[in-house]
Image 1 (tube, rainbow, N blue to C red):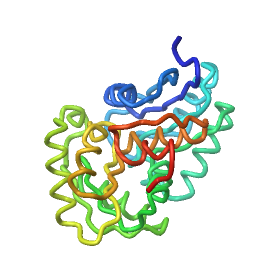
Image 2 (image 1 turned 30 degrees about the vertical axis):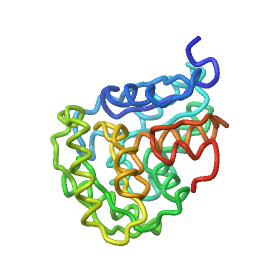
Image 3 (image 1 turned 90 degrees about the vertical axis):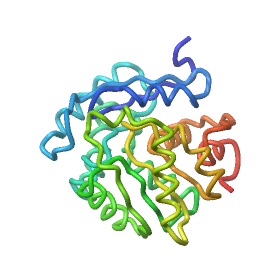
Image 4 (image 1 turned 120 degrees about the vertical axis):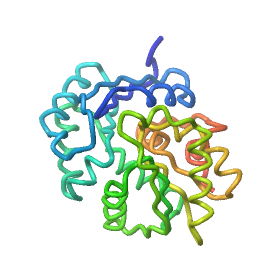
Amino acid sequence: MFGWRKRIGYISPTVLEVVPYEFYRFAPDGVGLVGVTCRIDDWSSDQVENELVTAAAAHLGTRAVDFVIHGGGPLVAARGKDFEETIVKDIEAASKVPATTGVRAAMAALRHMEARRIAIASPYADRHNQTLSAYLELHDFALVRVEGMDVPFKRMPGIAPADIRRFAADVIARAPRCDALYLPCPQWQAAQVVDALERESGMPAIAYTHAAFFAAFKALGVKDPIQGHGRLLASLAGPAR
């Protein structure tokens, strides 16, 4: 039966495409994804409004979800540190369940892996990388290297995992004394290359989708052993190291 253990709500800025595909590659049996979209077409700052998000959260609340994740890192980071606090409170009030954002979940995952010096490999243009970097620095992370592929918004899902892996490996090679690699954005297929990147580099690689659902699994007490998808998800069943 779908979602017989837990149901995780996901608010996507745009179409739900890569997220469900990757989620069901690692999700434990009985944990279901319940997604809605705000139908955003690009990353422009005027494309996100609290009313859209809270309406989506309220709708998810009627679908008996146990936790809500708000996606769209650039849209949150661009509005500043205080906006994240506001949007999480609004989502929790509307849905009546605990919530997080993708950015907040990523920072929690990096801290969980004891990573402070971070490299970023993203599909974004420079302006989004700069915004995200500044946001992480406000939260006491040091950015060692930040590079983006500058891929148009609607072409991100079509980037082959093999290309993501090569690009990310090159970023790691140019990031001295780095604690972890962060792969932001749920719209590209980065979660599928985490395990290979970790084996090749010897350092943790945190994909957006893994971090977001790690936060949900942890909050909901889901501790199943998840192997083959990187150190972060594997750590649910035991120590992070």
